[in-house]
Length: 74
Image (tube, helix red, strand yellow):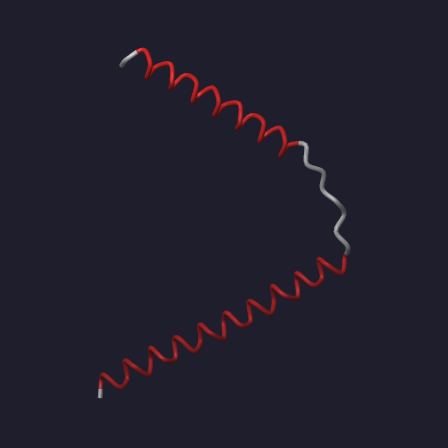
């Protein structure tokens, strides 16, 4: 490996280490605010609604596939 390439790799690794170290320090010092109960309740409700819609779509897909296979069998 040439001297210029080795020098470039050392600088790149050093810069990457500095950026990752700074990012980890920033993330580690993040302060979490208190979330109001109304917000967590709304998120829970939205999750339940999404779950219900997802199962309904899944049931429609399974029904369509079953109908397709039954038509093919006849």
